[in-house]
Every structure is written in C-alpha cells, then in structure tokens.
Amino acid sequence: MKRNRITAVVPMRHSSERVPGKNYRDFAGKPLFHHVVQTLLDCSQIDQVVVDTDSPIVIDQCAKSFPTVLVLERPENLRDGSIPMNDVLLNTINQVPSEFYLQTHSTNPLLSTKTLSEAIAKFLELYPLYDSLFSVTRRHVRFWDSLARPINHNSNILLRTQDLPPIFEENSCFYLFTKAILERKHNRIGDRPFMYELPEAEAQDIDVELNFIMAELLFKNLNNL
Image (cartoon, rainbow, N blue to C red; front, side, top):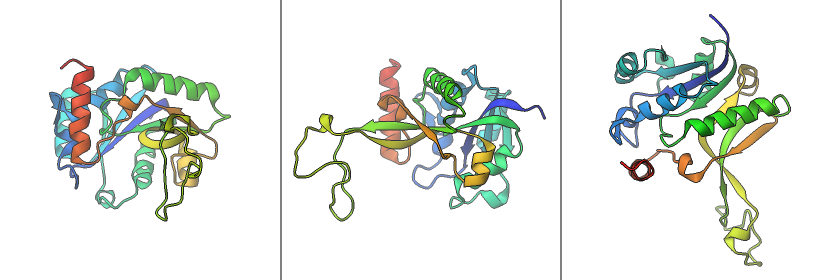
C-alpha cells in the first residue's frame, strides 16, 4: 500500500451510552459524522480519510456518500467502550502506512477545513522541533481542585478573570502524531507537543445530550440555517 504523507482517522462506535446513536443522528439536516468527514475531505493536505467503525449504518452511509473514504471494520476485541482509544488507533494505523496521522472525532462538527489546514501547515513548519500537535482551548477562569485549593490563581489576590494567566484545555478536537510516538508512548501526544489554539466556537465537543443541543444551535446560527 502507498505511504501517505498525512492520513486522517475518524474512529466511531455504533453504540453510544450517553447520547444514543449520536454518530449517525441527524445534526442540522445530515448525520452528525457527515460534517467532519466532509471537512476532512475538503482539506487539501490530507491524502486519505479513514473511518474505523463497527457500525453497519456508518459503513453503509460511507459507501453511498463518501466512496473515497477508506472504511475499516473494527475487530470484535476492540469494540467495547472500555477499550482505550490508543489501542483502537494502533490497530487502524498499522493498516494504513503514513508519515503523519491526524485523528479527530465525528463529535466535533463545527471544526472547519480552514482551521485544520492552518494547523497542519503550522505543524509541518515546526516539525521535528515539535514532534506532535494537539488542539486546545484557552481559558481565563478560576480553577480549583477537589480540596478547594486554587490551581491557576492566588485566592488572596482577586484578579479579573481576563487578567489571569491563561490555562489551556485539551479539547480533543484533533491530534497530529506519528506511528512511532503512538507505539512508543501509547499516547497521541509526544515528548515535545505543540498546543494549537482553536476558536471556541469550533471547539464544541458532543459528549452528552446538552452538548448536542448547544452545538446544533450554534452550527445553525453560524451557518444561517
């Protein structure tokens, strides 16, 4: 098999505990996963889009709507929800040779092709000084741990939140990494990762029902639907 420069991977399970059927549920007029797959296909730096799934619905829809997408059926031993994502990814990338892998989720429907393209360009410009990249959201809020200890501020000095030193949330929208990093660290984040800031609107991740409702409302508003 030809070795790609950049392969995009979208893992999707058929079942979802907190939002049943979310990957193929209607989102602003089309199944949720269609949004991110089309975004990836529209990104010129991506050579191949791969969908890893155990869902017959996703497999069927990919064949009809995205014939250029490589669909890999997830083996039985990797289908349980408790299986670490890194194990799933190792199985996937072992089947598709590539210099770099970009992994995202169907649950990030507001992610734009422009943002992905700019992130890839930045990573390739910085590599190998930075060995991986992951998306983050900048936060200016007061965080506390479970013992009521301040994490990112001095509780005796009441700064305005906008004046607090920023803290960055790993938003799980996308990761750029190599096979060697995933094999060696069992992690998508390497030893020298670059944190790529996303616009907050694009960083929406659908994890629970409220996220689905809010993301769809925002998507419709931004796209005048």
